[in-house]
Amino acid sequence: MFQVRIHGRGGQGVVTAAEMLSVAAFLEKKYSQAFPSFGSERMGAPVTAFCRISDKEIRLREPVLEPNAVIIQDRTVIEPSNALRGVVENGFVLVNSSSMIHDDSPNINIKCIDATGIAMEHIGRPIPNAVLLGSFAALTGVIKIDSVIEAIKTKFSGSIAEKNINAARIAYEKTLETSS
Image 1 (cartoon, rainbow, N blue to C red):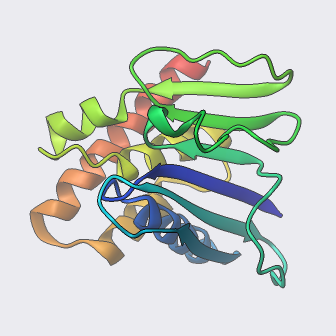
Image 2: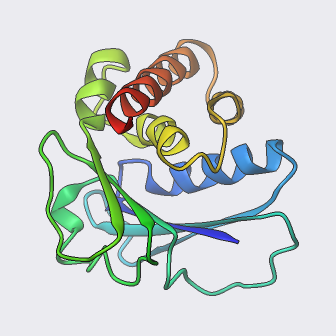
């Protein structure tokens, strides 16, 4: 089972990212689940969402404590949320940041991408979720970019969908270029 924890702030599409990731996995005939965890439900408050992807039925229902991947939609939540806790050995950390972050944890693959910058340029809004899912597909190989695109189409329509798809593809390509 591949477990993902997503950290961000209310209004950044954290819950939507987990849902779209789950849909992308489902489209690949995998079992998946997505669910949020948040407190005060207000714009800007820290939000965490979870996603599990497996080839077998998923019976777990608790929060992801030992993620294979962490997606951080807002780097300001890294320390307050202790976002890097529990990442498994050789796990992935994908951070929405234009500058690299450093962590002393051995054997964790940390990748930074300016998802907000890409979102502003191609979507016109600072919502990094689809961008990060494109990057996630390239970084981990757990899902295909085509599945991310189809998942975006299930959530959005018209020009909003097309802009998010374009931004996700750009992030996918940039991640492939910088990961090799």
